[in-house]
Every structure is written in C-alpha cells, then in structure tokens.
Image (cartoon, rainbow, N blue to C red):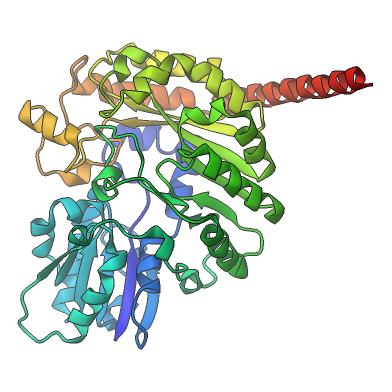
Length: 454
C-alpha cells in the first residue's frame, strides 16, 4: 500500500484583535514559526513501526483545511492533530474518504473522543499508537468495501516500552527546511496539572528512554543535517537529575545546540546546570503558570508542586540564566485566583527577572482534562464542543476573577508590552548583563580557589 502520514501543526487563534495586535508581534511570530517548522515525531515513529512492504510518504498540511494533492493517491493516510485543528482534520479526512482513501485518526483529541472521530475515519487510534499501528496497517490492507469504522485502543496494551522504540523515520523528511528537529528522551510527567492535555495520552507513568537510544536518534538526524538545532520533545525532561546528567555528558562531545521543557527543580542541581551549559542547552521552557503562589494552589493535583515552588521562582530563574541558559517562562492567564491585576504582575515579573522569552496563554479546557470536567460541571464552558477554540489564545470559559472580555483585553494589552521590539531588546540586554556578571563572579571564585591552593 501507499501510506501517507499527514502532520497538522502551527498556532491557531480566532480572536481578531489578538491576531491583529498580538500574534503579529515579534515574540509571537518567532514562536509560531518554530511550532510550524517542527516535524511530527509521533508520525515518524508510526512510520518506523510500519511493517515492511509498503511505500511511505510524510506530508504537512499547507494551510487551514488544505491537503497536499499527493495524499489522494494514497491507500491509507494517518492524520495526527490537536483539538484546535480537529475540525480541519475531519474536513480533510472526509474529502480523502470520499475519494476512496482509507483514513486513520490519532492523537490527543481523538484519544478522548474516539466516538466523535469514528464519524470521520476508517480507523481511530486511542492512546500511544506505536504498539498498535501495525494492526491498523494490517486491517487496511485486508479491508473490503463497506467495512465499518474500527477503534484500536492502545491503552488496553499498557504503556509503550520506550526502550524498545526504533529510530523515527527522519529520512522521510527529505530536504525540508526545518529550523528544529525533535528527539524524545522521555514520556510523561510526574506532575498532573489539571489543565495539561498531554497527560491524557501519557498518563500511565513517567518513562525514560535509554541514553544510548537518544544518541542513536540524534545520529540519524545528523545524517540529514550535520549541525541540527534539536528540541527534546518531552513534557518534563529532567525529572531524574542523575539520568539528566548522564544525557548531558553524552551530548556534550557532539557540539550541538538544543532546547527542552522542564521544571524549576533543575536550579537545585549545580552539576546538572554546568552540564546543561556544556552540552549546548540554549533554552529551558518552564511552566511557571503564575507569578504568585496563591493562584497556583491546586493547579497540580498530585503534590501541589507548582504552589510549593512558586516562592523560589526568582532564585531559580537567576540561577539557570546565570549559566547562559535562557529561560522561556510560561504563564497561564485566567486561573481562578487571577483578577485584572494579573497582566501587570506578569509584565513586572518578566522585566524584573530578565526572562529571555515569555510565553503567555489563556487557560484552556481541553477535552479529557480535569479542568474541562470541572468547568463543565460548574457551567463555566461558554461554548461546549467548540474544540476549535482550544487554541490557548481564545477565551471559551467564564473566569472567576474577571469577565471573559477583561481576559481577552488583558492578553492583548500584555502581548503588546511583552513582545514589542523594545521590550524584547530590554529583557535580552538584561539577560546578557546577568550572564556576564555571573561569569565574572565564577572566574573570581576559581582564581581565589587557585590562590588558596597555592
């Protein structure tokens, strides 16, 4: 069979004022380009576990509700998407099926709402698709006209053994001009934030991949690009500091540059920070969520981790950035304790701490999350079923501490002030001053230690 893998990515938003005033500003434009330019690692892994004897091709949706014409020559097309693009994915799937192409849908959204997805697909994959995809391919190869849609529930098979994963089919990417390549080092996160959609898929347990396998994947990417910029596509890469130190030691000789997501606890490990800097880590994206601890109580459902660490945020950011590693501080606007004053608080926090990058999003009730269940029960979802509003930039719920219009106006106001060229220059200049000062201090300490030794 000819099997196509269709990636649907990029930032979506419906708020016309934010599109006009916010998403066109430098910080948003940079982030949008980065997201759009990332290949779909999940689809590349599906390609890697596809049984031999099939012709495989990787595609990307060229725009909203668009599909590359080559897809219509395939026998089977796998589509992976998020809630914000699910209606676009359904529209593409419907057109493909009308032309006689078998369609398989998977990803976070359809794992939560498989019955909804079955109306638009021949096969729906719920959960991690790596282990069950060969069964989908076999079903498509043996399909007969009139066969009913089928649900393949990978969750019944238990967690995927990440130590058994093959190398993703990076070779299918060809010569596409990506500015980043994704590598996964772990799956899952020990913290269960009530708004986090990724825990829907990877909630079994936190799993680390063998460091040798991570390096094997990096080598495969280097065959395409000798000096790639890597994004470690994890929810929380450095949960295990000892494992993280080993990973960084192994990455250091490769002289690469890379980025990942983690939590503030990395600031507690001086050796890990030194190794991060030496291994080429350029940025850590950290979900701070709010500059004040009171707003974070109850956000993380297992151990209230976020609230307990909030008072340490400023020290942690200074410590990380003093090693030359930039922090992308992420804030979620519209938490229950947030009032209209939150926008100035975030702006002040970002300026005061010289955050090199800042990511602001609207609290979003993704289907399947504890947040969605709670807001739905409280009657606070404004338009139930409007999954296309799950963009992180549109308001589809009634906040507790302000009106929906105040939340919309606030993110527009904050976007203008965070992402202007002047603000970006000011924060980044402060970051470089911070790094120079810390470097000089460490050099002085090394010299003093040498003198004392003599």
